[in-house]
Length: 396
Ligand SMILES: C[S@@+](CC[C@H](N)C(=O)[O-])C[C@H]1O[C@@H](n2cnc3c(N)ncnc32)[C@H](O)[C@@H]1O
Ligand code: SF4
Image (tube, rainbow, N blue to C red; front, side):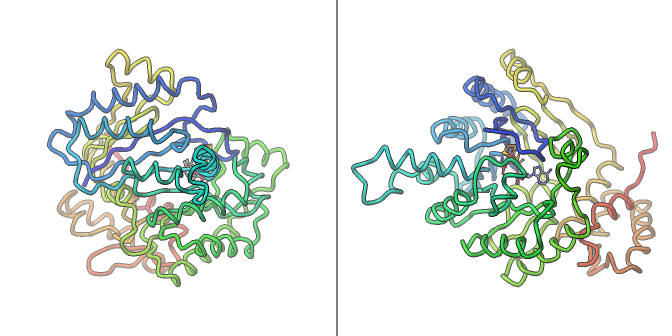
């Protein structure tokens, strides 16, 4: 199992909370697509004996690209790599893009006026092999969308899901909880509306106040209330209880899927499988080292055009690999296998994790079942903090 992640570094407007890499100027879009295709070609040796099972367009906003542009990139992957027969191909998409592209398509096809969707963007995306959509809804409430500076409104969020579910059954919806001013009742309504569309996957994140974002500045100036951690934790538990009651598996801290609808791309990533990240700011992993591309569109294009990879590489020590395994393991239903710790890292690491997890087992935040260390329901909201307490420190 291995994947290719492709970063599309453009957004229509900056959401107040976001510190991912993107530009709101689309001037370099064509050049950048050319560079992505070149990087795909330049890095084919890394996957010489590996079959690509998932392709993931993330962002930024991949739905700013037309089906024709995305096809050029997918074709480059097929041309340079061995791709499995049934790859998962995911597109992260924003509701306003899907709705506007869909309406344009319908207007362009008056001859099919009986079927407004007949020339739909969804059909075009499907035709080029995209079989999974991850739609950034965040909230169905106008005031939340405004506070976060999302480019879509509540009606577009609903209209988009209404149309998307006609074409795709593998749809994930992103929702954010812990937004200042969102009551528990409104949060319950957000979940209920998403479930009402019959989606099979939900990714949900606590609103994180990243330094240097507009959100951080507004909170510092008192224009927006600070995030209430207790309310966020309460909303997280509502999310878990509601989705589990609707037959979703809470398979990763922020991810819930019905059986058969877990993200294959992200599951492989959480299980430590190799992946290549294409595009500015994209990360890569080959099992032993991590790499990350330069976080700047112009520098990225310039380097790739001279056949250079703008990639910084960090070789992971045994301790780094153990720490990563503990961090991702505790976030997922697969947990941390004590046997794997022993066989891959040695008895010192095994003794270390058994000893340091005792305190959390006593507090009922962790438990061991069939030789696997897992987080209890009570420990879930704290799992990143618990994991970092079980980390070992690199000794030079
Ligand atoms: C970076 S976006 C890319 C996809 C797409 N542009 C979108 O907005 O949905 C992926 C997800 O990360 C979430 N995200 C980014 N920054 C966040 C933050 N500070 N707190 C919570 N969620 C965040 C977004 O809301 C989105 O659901
Ligand atoms: S959340 Fe998505 S749309 Fe908003 S700025 Fe970040 S990447 Fe762009």
